[in-house]
Image 1 (tube, rainbow, N blue to C red):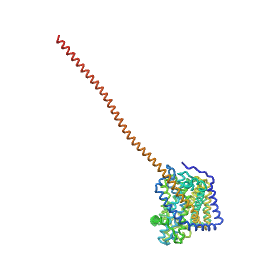
Image 2: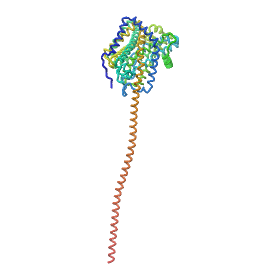
Image 3: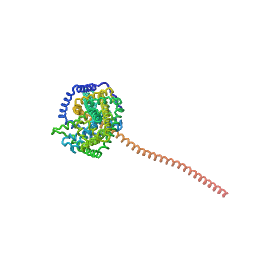
Image 4: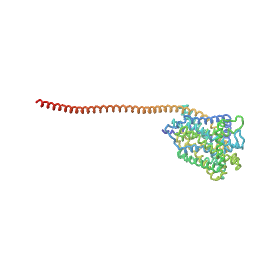
Length: 585
């Protein structure tokens, strides 16, 4: 049964969250300096008091989804038992990346490994072979299992409550097993408002990163200046462009652009592998994968309480917070495109495939950049340290056909930007339209404009840099991290009940099938016995009938023979008597 559309009237969640985001945009536009100062104070307080919480909960998320996938719960389907996936595997994976995380791959693919080569994690010496290995490993660490575990928890929970429980596409729907009908009251509305604000911040961060990188790329290959004005102009242009995609909906707009972009990204990846330091990339892949698998547990649970290093806060904790801020958006979108898949299949697609692609992507682009830097072929490091958004284009500039590949990279980022805006406006529209799977175009446009405004004021208030974007994500993600932790309890309650119910149904079905098999076997046996008895009765009856017939026939034959014999005897006696009479005469 297909979920029916919910009422699309302006909900309290839309009104309240739009007002809050609108006031934030207004604050940043009127007083960017005070916004920057307030955000800085909030960031310091957050890192000092809750950095440990971000590290612990993300590690727990990874462990939880792995155990869930291999458990018996993995057989449960996200939808009705007879439903099958709506999208092909290729389109599904393409939409996962195009939803926005692809922007992170493209932006940080070169930048992170090179940054960590110079600004190393605690315990490493910069500009050493060990720093290069650690740079690639930590870059993969920030983009492999952990972010996708965060997304998969929200996506799994929402897909389950939408398509299995027929609840609306809202974060609050996941809490129905815990708070019941109060999800329809202000408690549920408050959860949805927090999710909307976290989503706006996470998406605005991606908007800002995309604008930074597109502007950086254009300034690298053309005279266009790399300034805040150019960045906000790019945001305005993309906001206008995404409206055409949004008008087409998920199936025509996002799906088509996602398939195109996945192909373009694949071509660029293969090109760099072939023309770049192929052997170095292959060796880096093996080393990074092995190092990641070996050290993922220690990296996940390592803090720096005995040092004054800010590296963890500005890198690992920022990425965890950014991914958590992205989780409502990615979760609702992943749920929308994952109907009909089993939990195990869902986890394989959402967790393992992107993690493997993260290793390939970062070792290809980051490994190439490190090879150029270490060999002294190009000053990639100086450029990355001063303008991180130029990292990809500086690396492509050292390879053949750089003008073409740089242009392709700009197009790639642009399409990722459009699909991110399209996906974000769809998700925020659903979240503020009572969970409608088809929010109105007006609501989607409203959120597109508000997100663009948020990204713009963050860039302006942070002097056009990355700091304000990072700060906003870390602060906004905290309440949703708590919500996600409670969400795990809710999904376990639902899975436990449904697993028991399915088990009971399965046992009844098995018992019924067993009885049917036994009945069929018994029927066959009884049928054979009855046939044998009937055969014996028929044969006995036949024998008796034949016996009687033969007896009668024999009787008749004997009678006729005896009659003939008697007749002959009588005749003989008569003849003898006559002869005797004659003799007497």
